[in-house]
Amino acid sequence: MDLTPPSLMAGIAARIRRVLRPACLGLGILAGIAALAPAVSNSRPQNDFPVATDAKLEQIGETVRLTMALSRPLDVKAWVLSGPDRVVIDLPSTNFQVQPAVARKSVGVVGAFRFGLFTTDRARIIIELTQPAVVAKAESRPVRGGFGELVIELRRTSRAEFAAAVAQAPTPEAAPATAAPVPPKPTGETRQTVVIDPGHGGIDPGAVVAAIAEKNVVLAFGAKLKEQLEASGRYRVLMTREDDRFVPLAERVGIARAAGADLFISIHADSLTQAQEVRGATVYTGSERATDAEAARLAAKENQSDAVAGLDASEDTQDVAGILMDLAKRETRTFSSVFARNLVETLGGSVKMHKVPLRSAGFRVLSAPDVPSVLIELGYMSSPKDAELLNSAEWRIKAVTAVAAAVDGYFLNARAPAGKAADNRR
Image 1: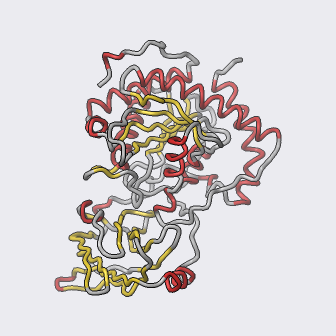
Image 2 (image 1 turned 180 degrees about the vertical axis):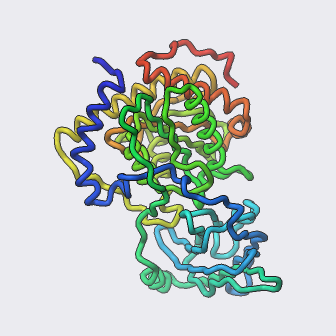
Image 3 (image 1 turned 45 degrees about the vertical axis):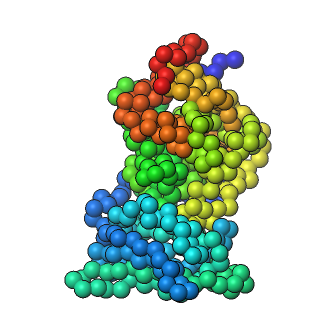
């Protein structure tokens, strides 16, 4: 069977887009697919934002209070949501200079909180609740010198009162469109289009170990991979995010489809709190059925990214049936598997791999029916050795070079040598 990706996928992609586009747009599935760009192209620097510092979480009588010092007063809105129980606080785009250790502190009804950019003009704080609670106060009050102070007070309540408060919350919002317009692949473009997806971002930090957040590790890796692929002159490379921003799962997929991507690579770094000895990189492809329980656990965790950001976590559905759709999915998964196997072989010659390096599961971010897609778990941040390597510039260059070589091999329809250079591993 001829598996040359450009020759087959170009025809498949064109046909499936003609079938899917009207239905998908009608269902709102592609979230502005006609003109999506890297999620940061219309952003302004975070140093232009108001600043939040000196976060404090404390129990005062029956109330838990979260305070932050602000460079100026801001508009604040707060409400509670269930599934999981949490408090959502929205404010204008803010540069959070808050120590991560404070956010992991558990006090009273609060298990932890997180913060970050949510859209191009909005920031968000999510407070995780260990017991039902309602918002007793949510304000930004002025203090001397033109500064401000954010004050959030939570009061423990009954499950019935909490449910009533949830019912009064704003209607669950759809994933926000954060991308700016960009034209699809230009006519006559001969380079292959590769979309790199650094996982998580903004309000969604991903795995956090000590003071290291997954979102920063994978962004650094993605930026270096983009740089190396572009340097070859063979690829048109886009990123779903280029700074610390939240990008909904459906929009990540939409960016790849709108760009006419020939390959989609999602970058992550997992954490296992109960198994610090587990380490090594793993490559995943999309599938309705997971290869094993660990793959299913990871997919369920990654698929909750929108919920972590306070969005409605219901999955998108593509209610478009027919032979063409089935053909496109089969062809796409074949090419995804070809690249994944090549990636495992090539990456395995340079870095430590997990004992089961190739797996599949139902990742929402790998759901494009016409774009071959893989998800790379670079390693486990819960492993001290992996954490050290993930933050090493030397290791990053070695791993990026291997991934870039796998991309080259995929488009040239040539496999990397099966032999594994064990002496290159650490």
